[in-house]
Length: 245
Image (cartoon, rainbow, N blue to C red; front, side, top):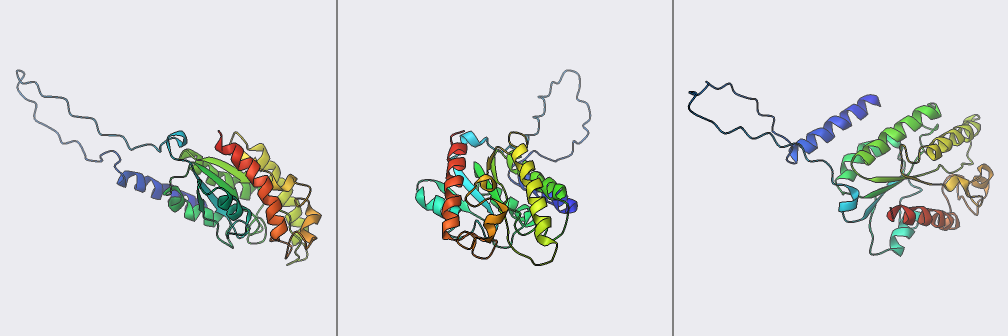
């Protein structure tokens, strides 16, 4: 994954250069002119343009994540429908993990968002790779760092509970890693992210046992229509506050 991040940085640098960055032409040695001739100084190469600060761009929200955030009936779809005058890019894709978000980052940044909301982890916190929570969190923050470096304000959602047993030790492992990851997300506000959407702190649907309630989670992972409406309430408060900053 580190190689993937290195490649992404290299691709981003190449894109900036292609958008009118500084010249790479080498300096050619010149024969000194006679002392009586004064030549004008050569113009300095123009620096590569920095990303425009979010405050100077039209407000636009990018939503990234997995199937919990994709589709018109999810909390992000309901939010964007309720705010027709807000430019809102729903870019979440079912089955995604943090690696897929990193892969989509160049295309996402090309949309020139001012704000980004991110909810990820349901697929890859332990289910795909069994890696430590701290390693997963490090990859999440490497991703959010790149968004913030481009002038985007980043709002990250805490991870929802699950009630599934694909392997005997999966659920207790997920419960432990979810708690560790969510604590790290909350602690990162103002350092690696700009705000948090604290879904996990909501006592209606955020506790570990809530995922086993079929009125809230249709399959132990995906929220029902009721669950999505409750998520919308938490999401709206956090995102509306972020848009005022």
